[in-house]
Image (cartoon, rainbow, N blue to C red; front, side, top):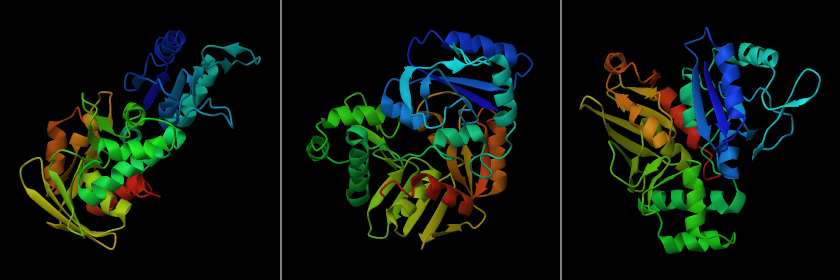
Length: 322
């Protein structure tokens, strides 16, 4: 079970929630508790934060009030008498952990819940919110990669963001903070999931001949689904072998036919580019993937067939340009 505490910086109620969690989880050392700070409304939407602090149990907010909207405001919880408190009642927390923490089926079949959350599946998507032109800019960036193989110019993005009375730099900063894309120290786009502006081990050649680089194996498989195109994926495995996947009409065929995909994430917190993209790789065989996983116990994950990984890529990226 994974618990995620979402909060604004310096929220005074986080310490109270942490104390309560330590008490309730005193005999549950296997439970992982992750803290993430949220500073922007767009990030609150992406993360599912309904005020600070928000507790997610395997990706679910068990205390969310029906109809409530994501926000970066202060959050209060109601006790048994209906009084507002800075943390949920102990009995309600225990009930929530029992109800949602015992879930054995992850949001995507065969995928650990913690990994699914990082990938933003099972309710969380990589499609940016519409506010302040974020989705329009995100889609402009993705289309540039698809057509030209690289990010758009600053001037091209200024044209898009100006329609929303914002600068391109402002919108890109929002998308970076919510991990819809990544910027370097100079503000240049280095990642726009599923694309990488820098060469990676995952090369995707679209049916029209445009070559792009993907952040990981699942991203590579998601590109044909997102663009509704056939493609050839050539990927170098962690042990130096090469896997080629032809995606025709949405159906992948791998060479070698024994190829699989390991889908995992480190136990650290941070953007997907840092904590999981390096751990979503093709392997020539299930034995090869299992051997790598055994040698890296700090990277929990699952071994998926190429078809399953293709469905996962479609789940994450298929609607990004809709």
